[in-house]
Image 1 (cartoon, rainbow, N blue to C red):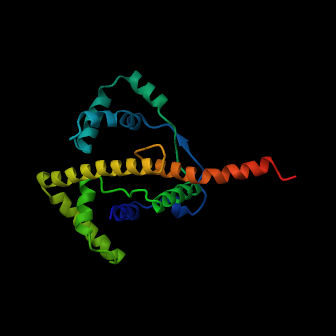
Image 2 (spheres, one colour; image 1 turned 180 degrees about the vertical axis):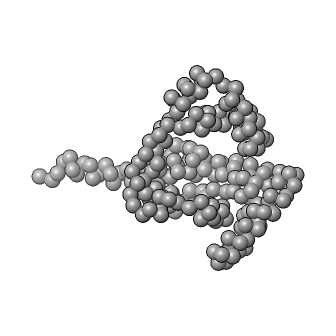
Image 3 (tube, rainbow, N blue to C red; image 1 turned 120 degrees about the vertical axis):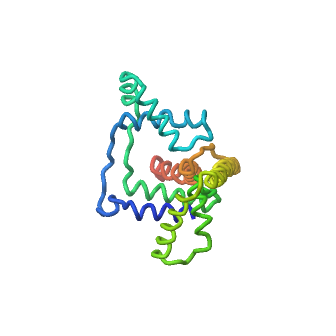
Length: 214
């Protein structure tokens, strides 16, 4: 169901890279100052305030950002990592690795926000419905989520936190069973798993090129 939510998000937002239907070159750019600040301090603030909502964390980060000195912000922006937009070919390669890992038991993600938990609960049992029907239901469920009291939302947020911890435990167990270094990111685990199972083939090809039969 989480995948369904993501798919509808894509439908609403659109994907200009796919629409243009042509190769898009890799672009590099420095992160804007506030984006770099959020990236640098978000996890730190969240770890110190585990029950704080994302909106509250962003508000606090905004206050911290405004209070920071220009020199610190300039240094942060200068040292910010360069982000790259992946090409369609790289995205397909990542998807191939993820599907390979999933085929071998890589745990699928669970809903990790209160909103997604609520959506999955409300839309369960609608498999096979038309796209138009699901779009309409998703819109109605999203509105009902907005109308929920904060107390009722807290129950779903707690379940989301439990899902997040359970998913990390599942990933750790899977990585240990398959003898690969643990990571909290499924994409990283998938890449390591794929490399482990295809490394011998690559080595073999390299060896045959370096030492052709006499």
